[in-house]
Amino acid sequence: MMKQSMGQHKRMAMGMAIPQPKGKTTAFKMGGLLDNKPKDAKQPAKKTMPFKKGGMAWEGSAKDEAQDKKLAKKHHMSMKAWEKSPMDAKHDRQKSMKGLKRGGKAC
Image (cartoon, rainbow, N blue to C red):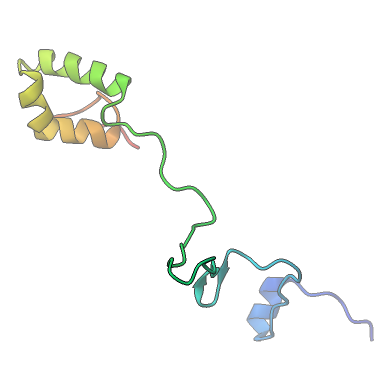
């Protein structure tokens, strides 16, 4: 009888071990992040993530400021009052001027 290669899902269904790739280890091991050993014993080890997190900042950007100014005028508010309003919080959350009072833009 010839032995056929099995896929990962079939092995899992049968309760067999799934072969792991050999060579370089992945960024996350069983214990967490890879251990970065400090050069000096006095300095603590830095834990680094394998990928950058976050994106462009929206609050305070030129586009946000222009939209805030336009919306403050539309709702008859000063910029200071607009920045404290719940509508501005929603505007910053959805990064859109559409549907601030109800509904809104699907993100």
